[in-house]
Amino acid sequence: MGERTDRRRLAAVRAADPFIPPALQRKAGIPQAAAGTALELDARITADWQGAAAEVLFSHPQREGDRELICSPLIAAITAVGWESLGVAAAKGFRERIFEAGRVPGAMETFAGDVAPQRAASDGAVQGGTRVLTDQAACPFRAFARHRLGAEALQVPPTGLDAAARGRMLHTFFARLWGELKSKAGLQDIQPEAFLELLDKAAAAAVRGRAPLNPTPSAIASPNWSVRA
Image 1: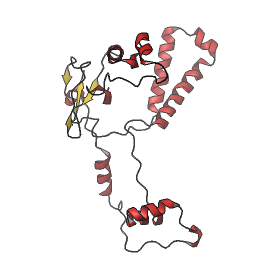
Image 2 (image 1 turned 135 degrees about the vertical axis):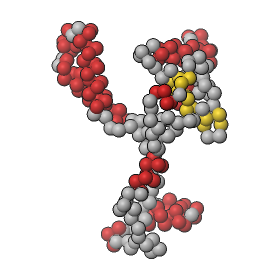
Image 3 (image 1 turned 180 degrees about the vertical axis):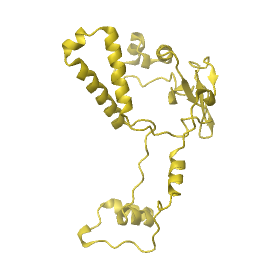
Image 4 (image 1 turned 135 degrees about the horizontal axis):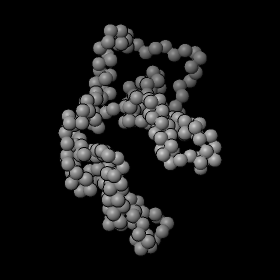
C-alpha cells in the first residue's frame, strides 16, 4: 500500500451522495456519510489486506514537499522495517535515467538555433485561433515555440502500470483463463483446486507479458517513504 496510508488521507470521509439527505445516509450506515463509518470500513479493508497473503507490505510517505506526514493509525502498530531488509534495489528516477542517456555518444544532437526553420508553403496559415493571440500577449517566446516550432509539453509518465498496460494484462489473463475453460459448462465443472491452479497460471502469463514498470524515486527505496511488514 502506498499513497493513501498517511494519516491525512487514510480513513478520510468520502464524498456523500448529493441526492440523498445526509441524515438518511447516516441512518442507513453508508460509510461515506460520516467519519466513524468511514473509519470502520477502512479498518475492515486494512484487515482484509493484512490477511490477503502470507507476507503483506504497507508503505506510506513520510513527507510531501516540505510537509512531514504521519503514519495512519490503522497501520501504525505494524512493525516498521528498512528497505535494505527487503532486498529492494534503489530505482533510478526518470530524471537520472534521461541524464545518463544524454551521456551516450551520439545521443545529443547539436544545431544552430538562432534562426527558426522556414515554414513550408504546404503548412498553410498558423492554426490556433485566439490561442495564438493569448500566447503572444502572455509571452512572445511561448507563442513562437508553440505555434511556430510546434513545441508541446512532455507527457508525465505514470507510476507503475498505466491504464493501457493494465487493460492488456486483464485481456491476457481472461484470454488464457477462458482458453482453458472453453465455456460456461467448463467453468461449472472444474474442481476448486484445479480452478485455483488455472487462475495462478493465467495470472503468471499476464504478468510475464506486461510492459516494464515506470519507477519513481519517491516510491521505490526512497528515504521519503517508510515500509511496514
